[in-house]
Image 1 (cartoon, rainbow over the protein chains, first blue to last red):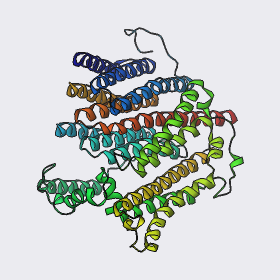
Image 2: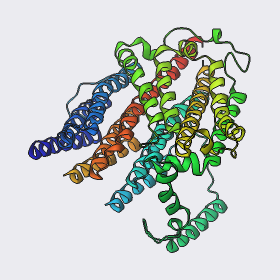
Image 3: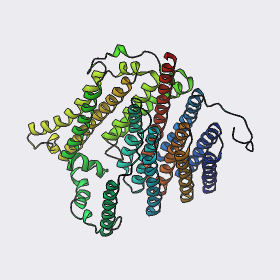
Image 4: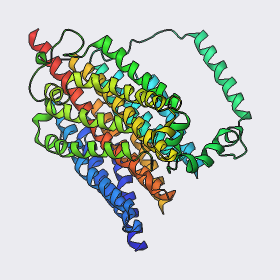
Length: 103
Length: 327
Length: 92
């Protein structure tokens, strides 16, 4: 029980950290969007699952489950809306390798 | 532990504050203000003040950002650049900062039980709440009963703020020359895209339900009228973002908004007058029921409802006043 | 355990703030604020359990909803501004 919860928490923290580092190091807006939104949702779900396992079957676990469901629904939607707005405003995603010089 | 978290959060706060001051693009400043509010909410939370944290998160990071953006839509986007360094202002601020820092040397340590602030009324409130009011959340008891006049003043302040904004900007259909029919019809940008529309429409009932939960659960946990009003207004703002301004003004009409604003404050004052008519003092809830403790609980419930109604009305009215003007 | 998790979240919050301060375009900043918001929700949940106060989860729930609304409001604002500029450049 504790082991499973600890595993979920550790994995969640790792994803969250990876997302943060990706936000900082990625070269353009769309790659940053990719890094931030995907790891956001998965890391959050894993961490909340870790806490739910430890909480047992109480009211707190139901509230955490509600938070997880809301974040699952709204995280990707916010990322979609952001990507759409960025695309409409004209910044086009450019495919290039990391070693290429800045265009 | 609290100290470590506190230091972390306060350092980030200073960094963000410097960022806000140095940002020339006003939109950047608004975004950083959102982060600032969140950091303050986390700080309050770490210090165990849940009601204040909830209010700061709901009002500061949610509604305030939306309203600031509404204001930004009406002005040019960059701050007027200033060239000179005002030496006198800098000297005055530096002197005041040094004096305040010097004054903090005499303050008691964080959480010290012998501090003067914990000696006089605070232990009395903590002891007498189970006996006189019998609700678990002492903050609501203090807000609603022991300091009821202050809360009445706060509701009147919120109402006055709403009045001020409405007089300056007007609300279509109620104040000013514009009519609701003049507004551009049709869904806004977000409503044209399927994903935000579906997810948003799915979430709105839950947000409103959660607002009602926070409103009436204020006696047992963090919550109360101010927070519930802000969350309810946020839900209706989401509806307005998805369905368009005109549609949203047909759901809660401007007349209804003005009624909510004034009605909430009237409800609060009305409870006071009712208690006077029943023989007690102004806002003396003991006379509202047979058992004085039950009377206190009824009184707190009704005034929190008044606060929630008023805050909802004001925040929504200000949002619609800004949003309807920018078209 | 919870302490290590909360430190990881803190570090990510700092990284998000750096991106918010340094992002070249406004969408970078909006992305950073959105991420900061989700991390705040996580931090509130973890610290609520760390302190043993599960009734504070109401804050995390409220904040999860409010964060979404403010990001959508920001994007709507951008779209209004962009279409207003497009209209004014069409007229001239």
